[in-house]
Length: 580
Ligand code: DGJ
Image (cartoon, rainbow, N blue to C red; front, side, top):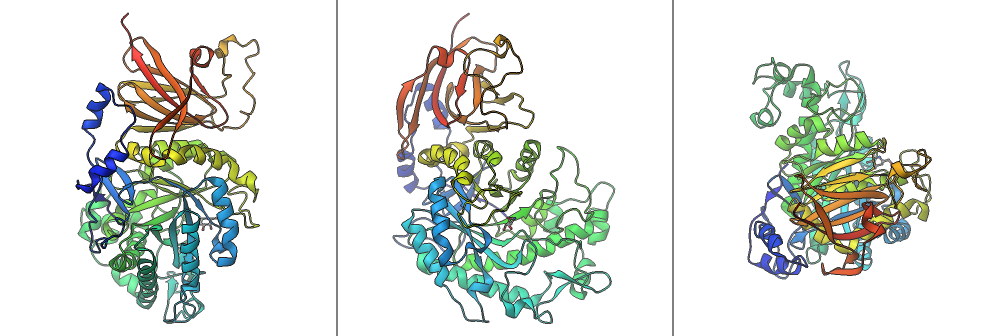
């Protein structure tokens, strides 16, 4: 799994022009000069044809990532449809929710069972309708290939696959008993899945290369196996006795005290079975992704049903039946990188509402070799604040699950509502980012952005920036300090549950764009120096990236920090130091 390196092209200069920051002071210019050009050449085969927009790409520079769409960084403000909304009749309720959410991208399944109901006969009617309607709604698409594995199981395989386990074998346990899960060593299964996926990618290229409505493809869905650490069938056993491939060793070295080379058991000891299964599934996915990209070279990724996030600096425990073995969990991302170079990144599906866990998951999946994108997230209101943290961390995007007015709620994983009440918390945040999303994606790629979400502990958080720091506190009243309160148990209305968040872009040496809600931000130089606000403009960026000022905050509105209200607000702030 590797992101492509950013390269300069001439055509890029034009794009840079249109995305130029609105105000360019001297110091700002110094910063801007070190910002390299962003466009890339497609790194693999299939160049864009004449008149076609550039192929979407995931690019990496200095350990940061961007998703380029039409040649420029793009921020996915996404929504995922429910599993069974992958039929034309279900789409109106999906689009209605997406529109209300101000989302720019829909993630939605394409199921093998609907694409190839009988072997070799393909039905693209749903895909055609979906792509046409996405264009009408001005949305991009992330297609989710529900093939051999969907939440580890074969439910979305066509009937001719699902029940023919002579030809399409299930995994076997040590006693030879069949698991529910299809084996990654099923040669015919791989060939059949690959053929269907190739047909899909060829078709998408045919209908969409001129528009790039489809910007990414997820290969399979939440792979791995519950209850069985690996396949013990004959082919799997033979492979398990082989030496660990050098590419895997390079990415996932042996634990301390183990030989650096040898068989899976020798090198990885108690981790061997999970690592081997991860390698087997990743290798299977690689075959599918590689063949699909040879047809149409879109960015591809895998998503992950999380295991408990790790503690910083601590090794993962060996599999104990506590998560889906073989999935791209944070501890085996290296194995996926080695085995699946045609997969751009592994993405977390976050259904852990606790703020500490969310932070740990984001840290585990954001690596110099792995772009962060939250492929799924709960759609309950408490998750909306994490959008600030995710977007501020420079993720390619975020996709809450179930942004869809189908009469179905996956509570308690997500919201109990299926109407506007479910969409609203995300809609407010997305609406604020939407007009400036291209600008934000560029700032993120340049390493200028930071994000925090209110923690479950409700405590203040500090953000270190270039020469400056921000202290973000929550549950504050807008006027005065906590110590002024007669009743210290009093808190601002509407803050009973954590709901605050701030994303900050440092667009110049002392210049910041703050986007946030329900939070107080105090900016100060990192070194001990007196500073004041020069300007605190409230306003918005328009779609052309131009700042539109609505008013300047001063007096009570700045005396006690920048108090972002319940409704998401954008501030453009300039700070200056002065002599003692
Ligand atoms: C994660 C899966 O990837 C989704 O398809 C869905 O099943 C959710 N879990 C639960 O609603």
